[in-house]
Length: 379
Image (tube, rainbow, N blue to C red; front, side, top):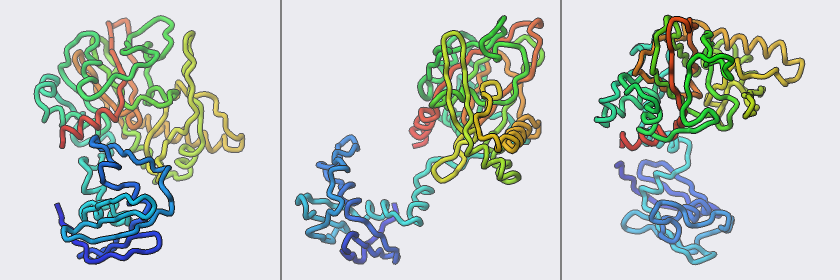
């Protein structure tokens, strides 16, 4: 751990300013320091905070400040006489300058940046062996890292029995049960309530965009596949969205700011959500895609936006359907496919159900469980 030494401090009206040995200056507002006091009265042994931030005096000030020989700052607070001790390492590691925040993001991250891809994906379909990941944490780490980095992965030789897909989800997290049940089956049906149970070709889409929140992981396990066709298609939505932003920024803006309605309805359920097709984070970074042509409803947007919005929608759809952005593979019995449902769009080619049986069993899970497991494995 890098060691930082405090050269001097100055107590200003609302802030404590610290000059470090490397000439960097940190500025701490007093309420921030009191709120994050490290004493047992403030922080429980579990790591959870005891102090109620809302009850602190926003004008709190120190009565006494002392720089100790062990390179810590001691503060006695005017309002309540509470004592706080902040080691130099803690102070530097909580400096709120933009420079230090960015440094900490890099230093504390357990993950490399994700990799965007298209049909030329260098490693081909990222995959691992079931027996290896259940017996060896290194193999499990590699497989989960594939999912995080590329957004999808395949697992080979999963036992071919009903419920195995949920057992794989439990290796890293928890099953997300929906109106389709704990698990659901994709096989041809007469008059299905969802087109996945037909033999039609399905264009690339994300699943369940009508839910709030959307399940962030989908798992599909192949139990039978006796037909020609029915190949799985996957597309990196982040790659496509990034290229849309670079080539058609106006279209990107429309799809990320104008919400549309998604709906699933059958005799027992009516699930609906209003959201943008491209989801952005608090700093306008790409966070998610919600694209499902089967579930989208007639656009409820201002009439003058209709021509341009259709152009934007069709442009995105055309890119998703372009083989240059797609990776295709045929699932065989025992193979399991997992995908980040806010990044990866998946579809399939058509097939003839008269040729034989095609049976996939699926379930949903969430990305936070996978990332938690991956962090613990890496740590």
